[in-house]
Image (tube, rainbow, N blue to C red; front, top):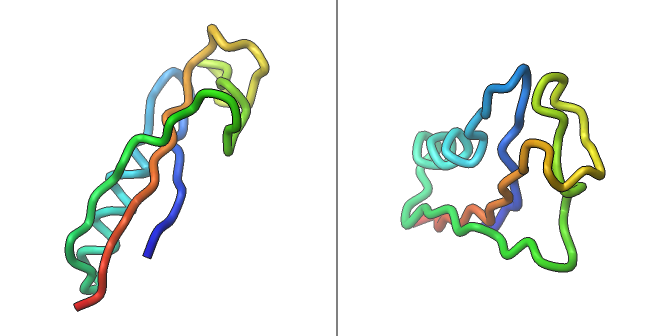
Length: 76
């Protein structure tokens, strides 16, 4: 299984959604789980950044960056 996920930024706090998704996969029986940072040059899943206070997407690259991951897991 492969799933693309990005961490979320709200009120200047980063929520590690990739790690949370890894934990969920482990709880339902997946193995060999890992999150690989997604190369963000060129094509992106999400806009380049988020406003650090509101968490809304922004075209301003200097705003809070969004880190994207590909989370992989295997069912036994």
